[in-house]
Image 1 (tube, rainbow, N blue to C red):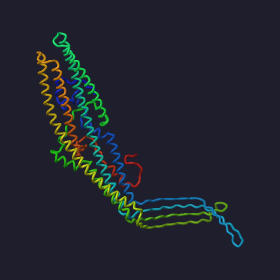
Image 2 (cartoon, rainbow, N blue to C red; image 1 turned 180 degrees about the horizontal axis):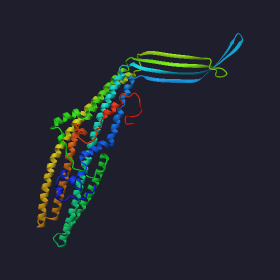
Image 3 (cartoon, helix red, strand yellow; image 1 turned 135 degrees about the vertical axis):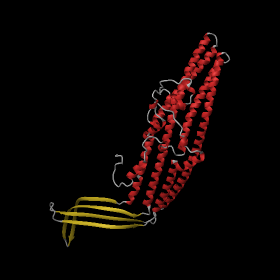
Image 4 (cartoon, helix red, strand yellow; image 1 turned 60 degrees about the vertical axis):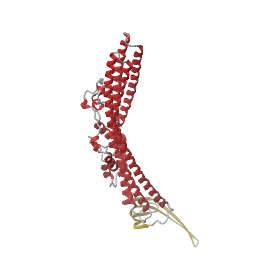
Length: 474
């Protein structure tokens, strides 16, 4: 990011949220805001799009489970020559019968399960719970991507402001060195003073290089998350209006609405249905089978006469009852395994609740800390500015040394960097708390972007009996 103008010494003391958006921007109206950047990330972030594809793939588990309610139809056909030779010896007389037949047949078989211990019903419940869990995972991924976007956006603002401070500091120290050299020429200061100024200027240039490297890194992350290069950015603002009024309210919202929590409990539902699927293997099953077939055999002589033939037609309808008695104990092991998995999913759900609680408490504390840090950092900047002005006046009348001026200048610079960092942390902490309670999404943020609705694809594929193409035409 190459600004067209530089921050003056007076502007350096103004908070980041009030200044950064106007630094080097000749047309602020065309600058990108934080909501606009988040909307761009929501539309094009590859991580989020990959999770959407995974959710659509999970949707297909439901029609696969529903297929067990439907019949299966198999067609078959065959054709070929049958050559039969029979040799006989009866009362001393030998005879040979030779017949050659061209045979062809075709048939259709239909199978329909009537009862299988409710395995199909429970398999559908497993699939539906998996779909619901996948949707919540998608919402959680959306939260993570949007929060990454907030961090990337605010990091660029922070690192650009620090870079501009460092660059301005190099200019100021350069002027300080020139003034010190002039005073050295007339004997007002010693060589030690000029060496101190040169040392501080070299250190400032080194800090400027680090700040520039940090800015480049932040720009690269911004490009990765948001999808475009950061050029003109408005200052970011916290989202306090969307946050609960107190910690207890935040915990209640998080336990109820966080996607990770809801996904974990949908996984519990899927595991419970899987236990019933495994138990259904022990139940009797009833199947209906119907088949029709036709066969024609043409007798062949020296040539194809077509005069002697046989037509056969078969039609059957059978109902089959299958009662499992003992199958080596595998089915019992599968049931026990499914029950243990159910217990595991319940424990994992409790773990997720604890993780959500810890995240909310931590985010709440970080937000409160960031608010206090801004107040303290602003007071530090104001005090450091007053102290530096006083030291410079005292230096002019010989009551302070060059080292004092350089030290107080560094103190003011450090205070301004701390303030910039605190302002960045303040914005990020508010979004972190919104993420922790599960409300960091496009609906809550009211982003101007078309919302992805995972239910649309599910409704499109749930009851499809045929077709290889996906709803988007692939």
